[in-house]
Image (cartoon, rainbow, N blue to C red):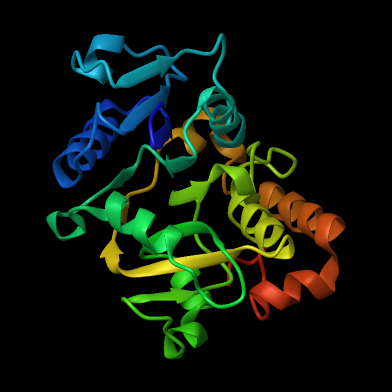
Length: 248
C-alpha cells in the first residue's frame, strides 16, 4: 500500500497534463515505492500516453466526463493510502518545489498547538494567500503557518480527517466547503511558505462544465449553497471580507 496517492482528474489538454506529470515526477521521489498516482481519464485519452509505461500510475476511465468534485470523489474511494495529494491537471511545479511531497508530509505530522493537521498546501498565485495574509505574521516555525483557506488545486490531505471527498457543493465551492468543514471538525490547515506551485487555469473543471464554469450563475449558486450549509456567521469566521459571488 502506498503512503501517498496523488489524485488528478484530467481534462482534454494533453500539454497541460504532460507538464503536470513531468514536473511532478521531476521534483519528487518515491514513486513506485510509497507514492502512487491515480488519474481520472475524463475524456478517454490514450492510456499509454498518460502512464508512460509506469506501473505506479493507475488510470480510471468513467463512462462519461465528471465534474472536478465527482472525479476526485471517484479516485478518493479507490485510494487506500493514508494521505492523498489532490492536484488539478493544470498545475505544474518549478524546480524550486523539489521534494514538496516529503515536505508536506513533514508538516502534516508535526504537532502544532491546538490539534492535528488535515491539509497542507503551497503558496499559489491566488486568493487563498491574500485572504490569509494576516496569518503570515504568526508563523508556527519551519516556514509554515496556519491559515483559514487553502486551494484544493494542490493540497495534501489526511484521509482519516475526510474519508470521502465532499460533493455537496461542486467545483468552484470546493475550496471553501472542504476547508471550512475540516476546521469546524477541529483540524488545522497549514500553508507551506517554502513551496510555490503554478496554477495555469483551463483544465478539467472548465472542460467538464463548459460555459457554466466561472459564470455568474455558478457564482450565485455557490454563494447560496455555502450560506445554506454554513450560515453567515461561520462563513465570516473564515473568509471575512471576501465576497464569493463577486470574487473579491
